[in-house]
Length: 344
Image 1 (cartoon, one colour):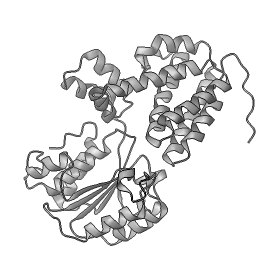
Image 2: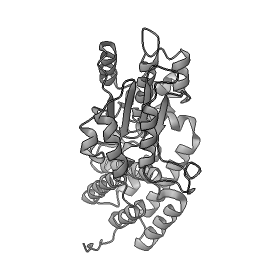
Image 3: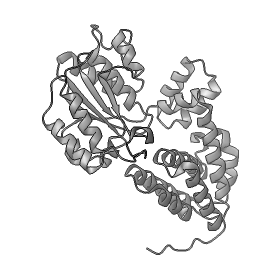
Image 4: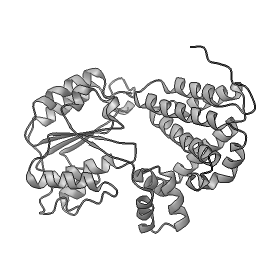
C-alpha cells in the first residue's frame, strides 16, 4: 500500500524494484517543497523494513514506528539546531560531523529492522566537506543500508553525488488530485478548491494549511504586504525588506515561502492582464488583484515574474536571503513611475 497521490509512476517503479530485489543503495528525490519527497522516503523506509507480503502494510509495529519517525534504524539528517551543537549555534549547512556519524551507524547491523535508512531532508545544504565525505559511503555501498537524499532540483546537488544515486523527479501534483485529497478529509468544496489551487502542485502544503491556521494567516500577511508595496517607492520597500529580515524572513525556508506566495500573486496579475482570469490561484484576492493589474504594464509583470524565479533559485543555492529580498524590492515594478536603470 503506497498512499502517495499523484506519483503513480514513481510508486510503480519503486514497487517493481522492491519486488525484483533490485533497489538501489542510494536515491536522489528532487522536486518542490511539499510535493511528496519526504512522504515517499518514509514509505520506502517502511517497505524495506516491513515483514508483510504487500509492502509497506502501514500497520505492523515497524511501519507505525517509521510513520511517527520513532524507529531506531531510520535517521533523518537535517540542519542542527542550537541545542544540538557544542557551540550552541544553529547551523546553516549539513556538516561533515553529521556524515561521519551516519557512517558510524551504517557500519553497524540494523538494531530492530531489516535495513538502516538515512534520509537527507535537504541534501542541497551539505557543505563541500560533508558531500566529499559522503562519497565514500556512496562509492562503497554497505549491506542493509539505504540512503535517500531530498533536494529541490538537480542543479543544487554536486554532480559527484548525483552520478552515484538513482534519480527520481517528483513533479507537481494535479490540482484536481489535491482537491480530491482534501474533500476526502471532509473539507468543504469551496475551501478544498482554494487550497488546491494555492498549493501549486504541492499536496504537503495543502495538508499543512488545513491543519495549521498559521499557514494561511502568514500567506495573507505576505499578500497584503506585496499589494501595498506595489504602490510604494524605494524607501518604503527597503524599510519593508529590513522589517522582513528582522521577523525571520532572512531565513531560507521563510524566504522560500515568501517568494512563492509572491510568485503566485504576480502570476495571477499576468493571467488577468492577458485575459485568463479563470486560471487565477489567489481567488479570494481576485478583485484586488484585478484593480492592481490595471496600474501595471504586462511586460513589467513578465519581467518581475522572471526575477522571482531567479530569486527562488538563489535561495535554493543558499545565497544570502537578505540581499535577495532587497534586490527584489529594487526590481519590483513601480506604479506610474519610471524605474531607474540599475548599475551593474
